[in-house]
Image (cartoon, rainbow, N blue to C red; front, side):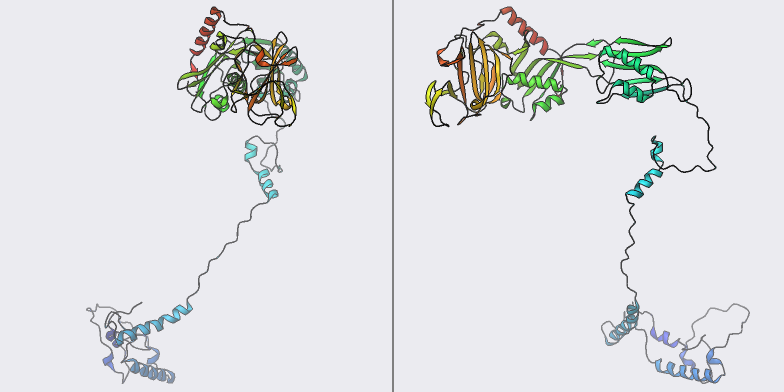
Length: 532
């Protein structure tokens, strides 16, 4: 805040206590008023000025005029406003600054304070109020809701005695879990007679699976309040069969329409990744197909040997409907081929072959392993650490019969069948831990103990050199090793004292050629999946 302008002109032009300038009474000094230059006056009507309080002749007005003259005389030599732009830093300048501060203090003292004002929060509706709002809302009614609070109709509502119905109604229904066809049709509004007739017609086709879709068309009612008759019902009990139940000539007729099927096997290839199961599922393989693939691979190659950068490859029999329906993606059958690729080259190739449905590699089918003897040199790659006969048990601490041979090997090393046979036992076997026993015929059995994992099941026919499990340390064991034993007539004998005559030293060349040709045909199928 600063005062500007000439203080001399302001003081000389001041007339304390008067309403209008230019009117001096008798004895008043006229030198204090400096007339300002005026423009030439225009002719106008003269208006008599209104007398001021100091111009009245009343005694109080006289006294007021005298007091005003004294004040004017005292203030005539003083400047109330100082121009702070002049004489900066001088005595007169500081006096003007002090007057400015004196004038500003009352204003600052009377300045009102400003504080934040917190508005009252909006009340949140409780559970009851929210339910009431929802009941009175319109949106549930738009969505077809029949619940909510109903209000009495006003005079603007015209009541109808009856509402016309549509002649036909088309409905779509899906059979749910723990549901049956009869109850589903009753909920759709079918009469009891039509429900029973449809159920009897569908029974020879088998029970519809949960998730089966039904397209139902209902006709007009015969009378008010009666159920609608069934005009048509269409569903697909199998991916290759379409069934329609239609009303013809007053009765219901079942019509079957077979759907053409493409039975070309499906060839799926993809990256193994961190989870072989998840990768195969992401590539489009069904869960049952992935399980069969893992079991086939596990017979010849431990999962630990498969790197994330490797690729899985499988061929599965597949049937797909050719009607163009998006609801059916086909049906997988049995696994035909399983393999693992590394750097684009096959690391393992196994294919289902023979009447028993077992998987063979070309080498296993050709009988290339250990052709010189019917018995493998060893069921595992390792050194013998304990021989057949009496010994002090390393855990139990006393001497007893050791009815087998122990081979030291690293954890997870594959264990092979010493010759062809059938799995007679696979599971936990007391001190032997995870244990597999093979029956080779002629009263000869072999046993394999302390496995970390079993790769075959009871009843599986295995070939010589086929992986049946992996080295571990289950049961009474001090470290990873294989306990291998042999039985003749049910009695344990030294496994190193027996030599087998191989069941097949050489496969039929024509059969081996057919095996390789069929594998080549499967691998020539178009690939699908992540890398298809």
